[in-house]
Image (tube, rainbow over all chains, first blue to last red):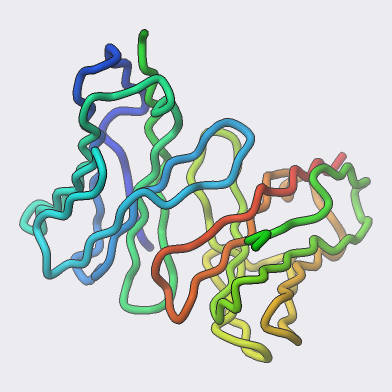
Length: 111
Length: 112
């Protein structure tokens, strides 16, 4: 089966600092990855995605890096704000239509 | 657009009861999904649909059934509810393929 895991279950950062959230995946055939943000009591919200033919993709204040050699994905948030406090999930898509989610990292931003 | 809507928001079931979780999207998305999220865990796919009349099993389909008679609606049926089905259920949709998914607000189900 699939295995998508996170290196750290919790992360605390000072407001204004950069945050890095990591994710390991096990299926080398996975071709598409998504980062989601989930605030308490809400459904996941899309942040950014990346295809397996890319190493890096940037959005507004966020960057996703993909290292296929070691099957590792990271989400970088620049100038972290209190509104960034949430649980962040990575999800990988295998060769079918199914996504496999990691267990999540809880990010707390300290004012 | 309302996006993805789910009803009810909360429900308590007794063991052996049945219920249907409703999901509707108004974005004309072809793909729809049902996930469950247990406390402190990631989401696990129950069923998905690539279009009206087409459904397929996900990672944890046992104890559930789905139907997709229209593009907009994708109800999830629980037959003979069990305590192991206590979870938060999320419905999601995506436009033309398994890409960016839009999630509903979730249904919190407790089976006692």
